[in-house]
Length: 52
Figure 1 (cartoon, rainbow, N blue to C red):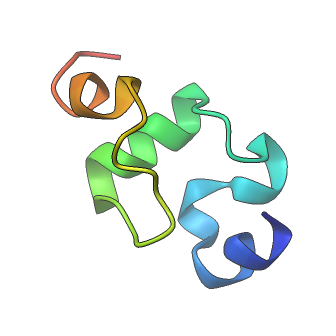
Figure 2: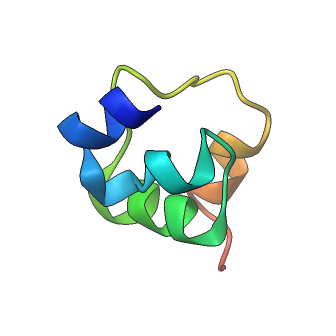
C-alpha cells in the first residue's frame, strides 16, 4: 500500500492500508478508480452513488 500511495497519493493508501475510509471513498468519487482498485469490492458500486 505504501508503494501504491507513492503512485496515487490522493487515495491515502499509506494511511488506510486499502480499507475504504471516508477519505478514500471521497477520492474515488473525485478521481475515479485505478487499476489497483478491486472493482468487485461490494461497497464500490454503491459508494460511487451514495452520499457520504
